[in-house]
Length: 414
Image (cartoon, rainbow, N blue to C red; front, side, top):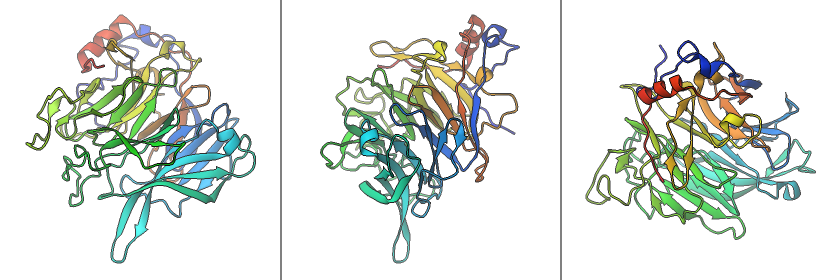
């Protein structure tokens, strides 16, 4: 039986709010038969799509056709145990000239009697003219960053570029002696001397060691920058009770503490004399959170603010999902005002009836800012799909707003 998100994921249908669905359009399939697709992106001013497969490949979709030869194949060095794999890809602004791009993956490093998972950012280079090349040189790897992980969980999954800085969100690592990674057993997220549980950034013009931008994360698997404002949106995966969305204004100078594991969302998680107390003013609360169902699966999949042109009703809306549930929500946040109105469950209008939109692992943008959704499906080598957010979408009716008021928990933030 499919589990639901208590207090947050009431899926209303057209029978409940027919005005909402009158002009709705559903997600458009872009590609299927993929091997665990987890992310999609594109270089600047490039009409193609580049799809990241967790098992270690990047494939190109050109004019709606998946190219037979992968753009990059590094399956021989990618460790996919538990939460591991190839999960991040970003093209810098100068990609058309340099051909250099960056990936984030976990690498299994052999040891004498054991093995360790390593978080790694590396650059690779396209073969030939980057503007038309569908092939990268797998032997061109240049490591930018590597960190041994204490566990096979909670190591983030996204890299993104704002200005000349490359950002990486790292989770708390799950603990060196923990099978479950529960409640940050090594207290890494609040430890300013460790990189785990932090948002890091790298100066691409200097190639220096990473800077800690912010701390207090459990597992910021998906984060993104609003391409218009530069605001940072983070989906931090929770423990037992809360999933949260954090937003940081582009004007921030960093140094913020998002609370884990003192707080899980807005509730006390693991107060300690060596940490700030619960609800301490120094801790930044989420702009939105939702509850777990008892014994239910929940894991927020952070998304993007829509800045495309095909769906006017969604411009400025942040779309996100949950790995455990085939549902999509949107919210609106504004600097200085916080959360504007209530989040809206977009599932009834977007998810096609009977679709196997299961295990949503990422959203993505093309060069024009149009949004895409990646779904792993049944974890088979051919069970994954990519969908495009279509046009048009209806404006939520008063009936839907009333349903949302009863079903969604939200907090204002700044």
